Image (tube, rainbow, N blue to C red; front, side, top):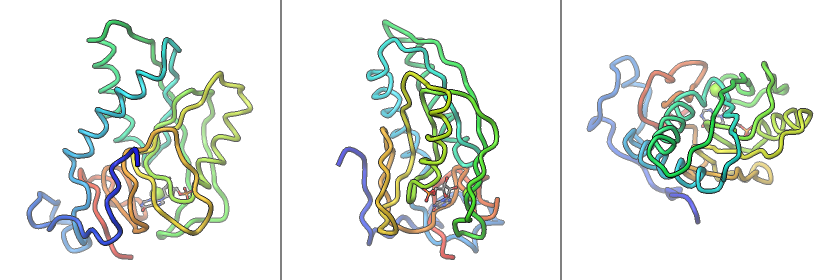
Length: 199
Ligand code: IMP
Ligand code: MG
């Protein structure tokens, strides 16, 4: 395994030991990945990515909305490496909005808004990889030199042959998670921690 992979039976941390906004306390089961752990892992991903990128100019493409926290934090770490390292590469940023979920279930149609060629994708979570494959086939039209996909979370799911991104933050059990910009019907994006919820 080349990413931390909490086991299926791992129940996470007691939510009462963390600061959870009052308006969400009732809805959440447990804190699964604390904010600090997400940031520590993101710092290492930034280092790995920059080591592999060489001197290629990077177009960082954020997959909204769920990817915005991870994208911003990952870029902060990459920028720090650019400031402090022996070499540095120019980075431009772009954004696409993709919608594939409603009421906690996948929708028929995957809609993609906004288009730009890219070499680096920052994504929130990959379940079956259906969304990512749709985006990748669209990006191909722009003939980018290289496309690398970074996903904070990848779910262990048996629902379809799973897609593997180039970089994975955590490989997690097949449960619905929210927080750190991941939503359930647009709620819970305003939570710092990644938490389990039952739906
Ligand atoms: P895939 O297309 O099956 O890989 O699903 C990926 C997309 O579904 C993500 O970009 C999210 O929008 C959504 N999604 C899948 N699982 C979760 C989850 O546990 N929490 C929040 N959103 C999820
Ligand atoms: Mg969503």
